[in-house]
Length: 466
Image (tube, rainbow, N blue to C red; front, side):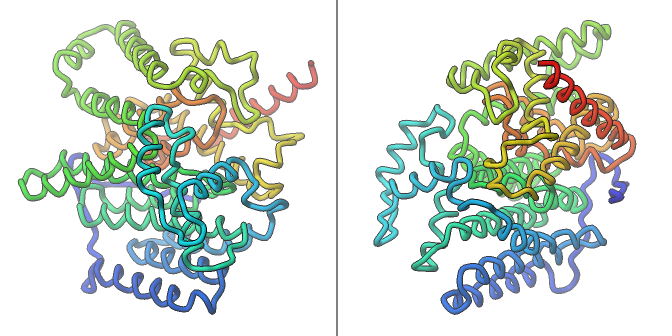
């Protein structure tokens, strides 16, 4: 697929108008369509209802953009419907689904479906600094609960339909807010929206229940508000942008509080990359190249040590999903070099792929392994582009620079995450994907493909050598 080239000059925000009907026509059309399906949900049944919701949201996103690439949104409901028949085990038994379902039963009365709010708040506060582990998992609560409100009998696969529908809903909210705020041009919004809906990464992570959708929406709202502050100066607009930022921070806070550390790092990196960080920017510019590298490494190590203090030791030093073997745990926790290893494992894991035997993590649905291959390739392509094209990214398009700095900051959250989970890389990739828009900010894709093939060959040689 040929990516479109962006031509907008730095420091300028340009939005294509939606035409006379305006965005409110699209919003109201989608709302009435969803409400119509909701009214007839008992007659339609769970499958038709959620695929209907998904389809309407896909057409809504399609209607907001121009160009052929927007047709990819329409693949989402089709993929969800077809892939749902390929699972070889009940969806509620895949991955961490049991934990999330048990969590719902803990906070929700099964007869009345009323949430025990005091217990939920108390549990959240108690588990605040465990980064959500053993907490309320708010990001999955309503995904599981919504089908139960609609239907008396909810087959396990309906949780997959619900999760996929909420994935589209998050993108709908993010795009709508972005267009209304005018803080990110639609070209970049399209790329981010496509990545969070139909890119292999986000299709793959929906192979089991997860809580990352709400967190990604929070990140999306935060960066839209933040970028607005870089462009707009009126008091009224600043208040709206501030409310957007606070909303985004709140969603991230209830999803994974420790990620706020990465967002604080982003604000430092963004100002630093714009040469607007007092004293440090001047010191860096005046330093020789080898001193610049030392300064960057020192900052990376400082953040890594801070992150490991924030996260529980048994979590940050834990291993994973068939990716990081125990023999590499020591290396993965070393300063600086450990970050590289963590990024590599997160990008490729589960790995290697020839002779793959971890089918249970995908519910024995082979389609998701195919998605994972492409997801890993995209992740490696972005990482290689960051390494090889960072000066061009920083000095070229201002909006791409900001989004790239945001993605880098989120990547560095792997310093306080378990090792080898591909899903931990997912929140950063939609924002990093914008670097693939321009030839001068991306490395050739076949370089990434060659690296992935090399790693697979190396893994197979290591396997046979044992």
